[in-house]
Image 1: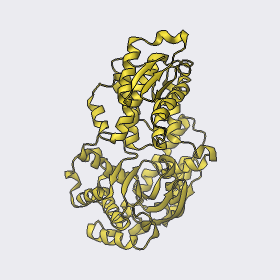
Image 2: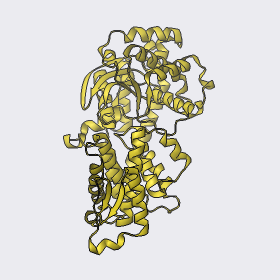
Image 3: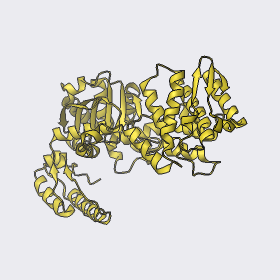
Amino acid sequence: MAGLGRQVASTGMLAQDAIDKALSALVRFRILCEAMHVGQLRVIATAAARYASNGPDFIARAEAAVGQPIELISGDREAYLSALGVISGFDQPHGVVGDLGGGSLELISVDGDRVGEGISLPLGGLALIDRSRSSMKAAEKIVRDDLDHHPQLAAMRGRDFYAVGGTWRALATLHQRQSGYPLNVMHGYIVPAREASDFVRLVERADASMLEAIEAVSSARRPLLAYGALVLDQIIKRGRPRNVVISANGVREGLLHEQLDESERSADALLRGAEDYNKLRARDPRHAADLIAWTDRLVASAYPHDDPALQRLQLAACLLSDIGWRAHPDYRGEQTLNVIAHASFSGVDHAGRAFLALTAFYRYAGLKASAPVAEGLRRLLTVRLLERMHILAAAFRVAYLISAGMPGILSRAPLACVDSRLVLRLPDDLKSLASERVTGRLKQLAKLLGREIDIR
């Protein structure tokens, strides 16, 4: 953290020590990019360089340090890129994006893949400390005055507020640790607005060093916590969102998303990520297509009017179902659970992550298996998700026993619910697959579906 925006509000200039630190970092980045043979660099400057009188001189020196031209973006463009970052990281986001940096706060509405009009306010943590002269009372008045009468806040009511920026992620880290949250992932972390408001008010009043798990926040970030909490508190009071949703994606991811062609922008990020894992880790990636069709037939026969959101998770679960096969059999369940739960997936919330991780866990470890990490993740699932997760895991345990993870088998051994029976059909050359183990696993699945087994 160079802290470029630290004194701009009071002096109108970037501080020399901050300039030196930033230039040093840029030289380091240039060397690392050269070592990595990076083909293209995009460099942007935001609020501090916009507002400072010596901003143009700093940008010239920064361009020399990094060896690239630098784009000084407007507040409107910064808001737009933040919105694109959120769109790239969530499945059909609806609400308002708030990006809190050191020098500014951007607010902009999102509706699926559509972006509204944005604003940029000088309410970044460093700017607010400077403007208020480190007085929380003065800072509160500044925030209240600056946030009054903006349509972006009205657009937030009853919808989600997507919180972007390191200070808000730090606050969410503290909230996770305080509540004993079972998943150590920040992107997609959801806190109901009322609970978030109560928590940030606690942070506003507390000495940062006294906060539980404060060591999880970098020392450079800690002085900004109370000011970030103050801004979030006032946004919640005025905007009245339903939830505060933490986004690890922001301007940088938005800049990348903007460069994609239309077909890539519209791709389902979760399914694309699951496809990549399948290609990299499954024993035969072609088996996933068979499993998807086989599972679709089974579930459609049991749930003819299924929820599209569940169908999407089911598809991802099929793609991820064999990524742990190389691990030792005794540890496949827990290892695969940890890989999926903490994977860098976009486009899935924490309940969806838990669903996918637990499906793989029970597929490997057995439906009666238990582990502390699995029990923690179960807390994130609704009863409906728990039921479907167990059914999918039980179905996968049948499918892999029949097919050994190889393509060309499941398409010849369809499984479906027919009236009160769960019917598995096997051609003559595959009838010996109906072993005692297969029969036992079919009975487990049939019990979950409320049916009797019938092997033909």
